[in-house]
Length: 441
Image 1 (cartoon, rainbow, N blue to C red):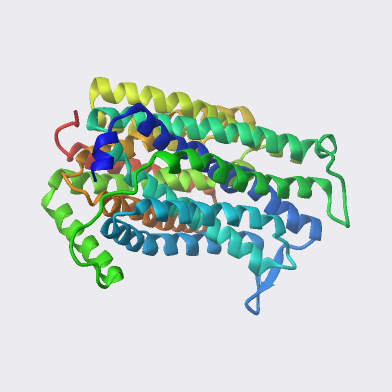
Image 2 (cartoon, rainbow, N blue to C red):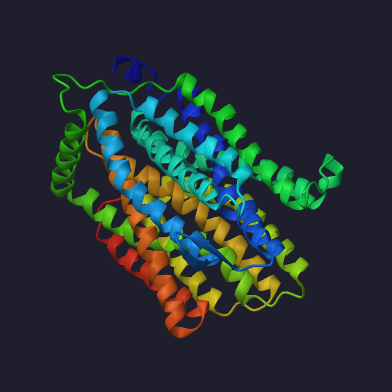
């Protein structure tokens, strides 16, 4: 504990914590948003099939990856509180941060061998890549109140997201260059595998190496955590006991409880939009050709990431000037207006404008939500357990949001109607934020 207190607020410690976003955000962009979705579709199209036999039944490629994603988030929602409680009890959450970092990075490298012939292995790598990213991200988030004072948290949270956006864009540009010009990098068709797919596989390896390499700076400077006193029998059960205590504390802290409820609602919409934006653009926008579609979607993804850097910075300034809750209310209003705007999108230019606006509020709402929650925490050493509730709220929201989005789209026959439906979540989020009470300082 003395180590944590001695370093708290220092520039070196703050930068080391923020730098983990630089290390792991390449997964979120390259694997989740850009290269892997392109690779997955191309793999099936090259084979000339749309379904695959798995567990004795035929399933189409889109539902398959969707089900695996949902299953992964269910697993994450279950395991995160368990890991968090155990980590707080043992007083060494850094070892768990390392484990899930390496699990995610190794899984990214394993995607190199993703193929229809080895579909089970490939899907397992995809599954554990998600687990490694989101659980390690939750543990790193839990360090925020340990390493930064309340007046530092908005700024350093925004800096972390900005570093993540910058780093992920750098690697994505390099990977896209490999995919678009594989011959320039000496990548050629080999053994029936086209060069483009080979280049995509190399990009998966680059993500794993980048993640492992740059996380070392974070690991070198972050403290282990708070060491819990007393007997440590039945560590697993004590982890659940810690979570129960945290739940009771949430009930006594009206402001924190109300904020967590508001976050759950609006984050449900934010995360759903981030996951389905590419699919919406592919299906609903009138692209001139397949090449224009691919290029347009990639440009949009890059645009979102670059503008998000500005969004996170501006939001940190706004929160200092006007308060966290007021700033979050304004951001939610903008999100709700964007949902209405998305309903009317037709042309590629419309989509580019929407992508730019999404980038501004995406970076802002993620960074500010994290730091606001940290500010509302009571004086406690159980930061990992508290942040597990934050993380689980987000994951359950993803499960519910994506499910409801799909149901609305299926029942109405259009993804556009689902965007209006998501806008309602932001309106409810605004109402709940206004009930939180006094702004943070």
